[in-house]
Amino acid sequence: MKANKNFDLSNLKPPAGAKKSRKVIGRGDGSGHGGTSTKGHKGQNARSGGKTHPRFEGGQMPIYRRLPKRGFTNIFKKEYQVINVSDLERFDGEVTLDKFVNSGLNKSNEPVKILGKGELTKALTVHAARFSKTAVEKIAKAGGKAVVVE
Image 1 (cartoon, one colour):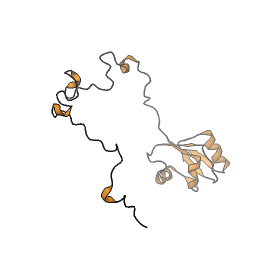
Image 2: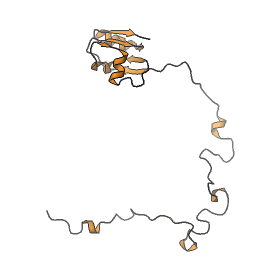
Image 3: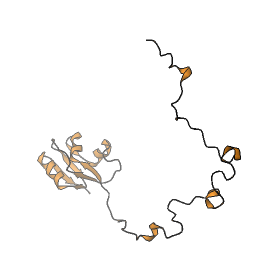
Image 4: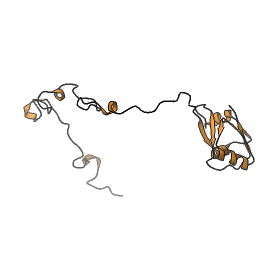
């Protein structure tokens, strides 16, 4: 195969407009960006570090202070690791909390709640803190048992 004469490493160039030179400011009037260095005359924005934070509204009461606070954090809320019935297919026989952790389904070591998404074809005895109604039905339909463990 013959190489294209115009296309080799010695004459590669970027496409037109791809390379743009950096704007040099504050290097004399001859550059076109001397004097005030494109910052205008005096004022806060001409100073070093003179920008305001993004939520500053010119001194008027900001929106995050005008609007009322809502809601609260329930300190008694229980977090559960959610596992679907379809994820139980990988197990055999009795499924305990240790098996969930060892298989990587419960990485946070939280109490487990079994939800009813998917299908189950094996008869399993599943130990978990909570079960949804559909999960209990699907486990029973497959010939298994749902055991609540605290």
